[in-house]
Image (cartoon, rainbow, N blue to C red; front, side):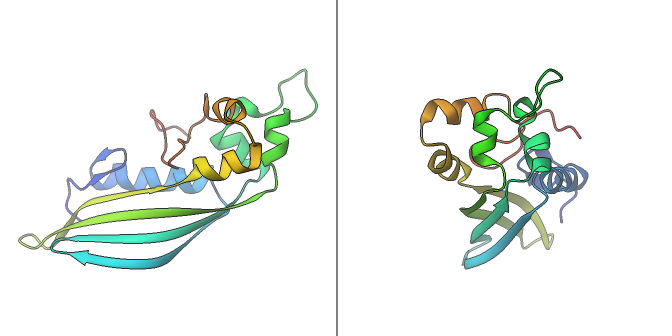
Length: 148
């Protein structure tokens, strides 16, 4: 990889690695499968399916605003609808190759988390509530600042 590789959260190998470490921390039960790969000049487009299980850890890490507060003993209704559910999303990853330096110069990925969450929650207001203060976006990328 190029030292200044561009990713979802900026540039640099360390930032890219940190991004994917955090993504795996926020969504620990995640499995990605390649559906199709297409090469166009110096770009590689990968279509994927991404499967996640929304565990208590995933809710606490990616959607911390939905965990029970000190005075509550149970999850909010929106969180209860998500807890334990398996989601299968369509995703994509783009790689750009620099043939002069023989390095990857771009690696960006996303997945359609919005459609799956909408299907589980049933209405847009609940979806807005879920993503309102989440650490993950509807396209399954991390918000900034990146934190553990």
